Amino acid sequence: MTTPIRVLVWGENHHEKHDATPQRLYPDTMHGTIAAGLREVLGDRVVVETATLDDDEHGLTEERLAQTDVLLWWGHMRHDAVDDAVVERVRKHVLSGMGLIPLHSAHFSKIFISLMGTTCSLRWRQAQDRELVWTVAPTHPIAEGVPQPIVIPAQEMYGEFFDVPTPDDLVFVSGFSGGEVFRSGMTFSRGHGRIFYFSPGDQDYPVYHDPSIKLVLANAVRWAHQSRPRVIPEIGMYLENDFGVAREWDGSAL
Image (cartoon, rainbow, N blue to C red; front, side):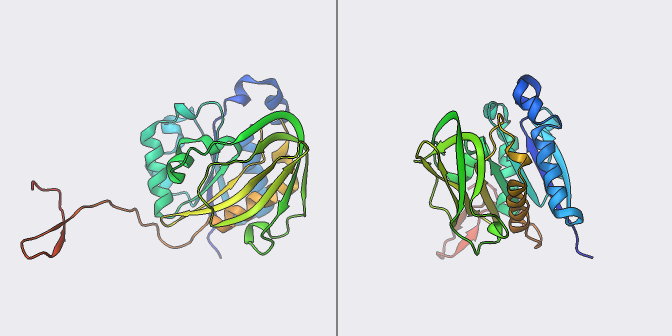
């Protein structure tokens, strides 16, 4: 029997506590709804847990990350509240092979910015735009079975220019009723890890209840998962000895 993919859905869980609209749309929280969608689509192929900002160490302890194959991340209002030490811990695990799927406003999360090395800024407008999510890489595994296009009747507009590095793959491009376009689904590789950024999913709209969005996220989890053993990267320095031959510095005094 195939070992199930171990998935952790991380949610900021701020809007669900303080704002009426997300509370109405997501009575089981946004992260809970995303997790339920993955279980619905993937069944026993996954084991899905959730964590939030207010958990001890944000629910992202070393032990828990070591037991996570793919991490989904939704954040918006409280990016600055995420502890830098936890961000570095997550980053190390991504570099070692853990999959990462930043969602919507997680483009401004500390972990995504640290992995991209750019501002990750974009244009936006909150005006109930219709969004059409077009597949531009139909043979990519994340696009498997996804309708063309995905129609989201109302959504926050994200528009170009999106300040991220050139992606490995551009899978989806969105068009909005205001005329803007946006690279809404992109893959990146960092170290041994696979990253898929996907933009649809503002807290004021029921996007994560959409069957097509559930399918995209399920496909992304399967794509981001890698079964090979995790290798935590170590950063070392190399010096030259008296004969000009490189040796690794062991941390001792020079």
